[in-house]
Image (cartoon, rainbow, N blue to C red):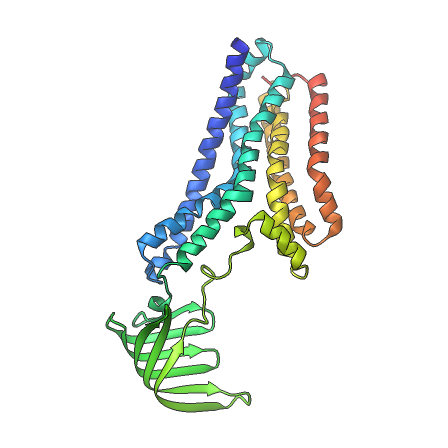
Length: 358
C-alpha cells in the first residue's frame, strides 16, 4: 500500500511538472507569435473577430513543437528535485527497486508520446487548416494595407503603392503604383469591389513601362482598372504540408514523386518524432546513478543533459537527410528501436553494478 502511494506520488509529480513546463513554454511562444501577427490588424485591417480565432487555432501546432523539449526539462527538474530533497532515499528504503523506477519513468513517457501522436497526426494539421480557412473565408482583404495614406505600402513582393490622400470611403488622390518594371501615376483613384474581388480604379494618369529593349514607354489614360486578385498572401493561399492529413501526404507522395522531399520529411516527422520521447526518458534515467559526491553528481547531470540535447539535434539532422536519401531513411527506421534497446541494456548494466545516487 505504501509503495503504491509512493509510486503514485512519483508519477503525479513528474506529470504535474511536465504540464507546467509545457503550458509555460507553449504560452510564451504563442504570445510571441500573436504579437508577430499583430501586423494583420495594424497593417492589413483585419478585424479582432477574425484575428482572435486565427491565433487561437495556432496553439495546437505550438504545443506539438514544445512537447519534446518540455518533457526533457520537466523530467530533469523532477528527478533532481527528488535527489536534492532526499526523496529518492525513501524509495530505496521502502524496497522499491531500481527497475521499478525506470519502468515507471518509461510508462510516464507514454503519456506525452500518445499526446504527440494525436497532435502531430490529427489536431495540429486540422487546426492549422482551420486557421487558414478563417482568413480565406472572411472579408479579409489586403486592399486596406495598400491604400494607407502618406506611406509606401508593400505587403507583397514586387508591388509598392503610395497614396497621398484617402478619405476612408474608397476615394484616393495622388496614387503612385510601382510593380516590377512598371510605374503608374494617377491624380485620383477609387477602390472598387466586384464579386468579392478588389480593384483599384485609377483616373487621369500615366503608365511608365520598360519594354524588352529596356526602353521606357509612356501611356496616358483617363481611366484604368488595376486588379489585385493576382496577389495572394501566404496566409490564405494553398495549405502547407503541415496542415495536410497524413493520408493526403501519402497520396501526394504516390502521385507527385518529383517534389517528394518536403512530403517525406513531413511524414517522417509525424511518425518518428514522438518515438524519441521514451528514448529521452531512458537517457534521463542515467541521472539516477553516481556516487554521493556533489561534484560528480552535478557533472553527471550536465553530461546526461548535454548528450540528450546532442541526441535531439542529431535526430533533427537525420530527419532532414532521410527526406532525400534511401540510406538515411532505412537508418531512421531502425534508429529509434536500436538506440532504445542499447540504452536499456546500458541501464541494466548500471542496475547490476552501480549504486543509485541518493
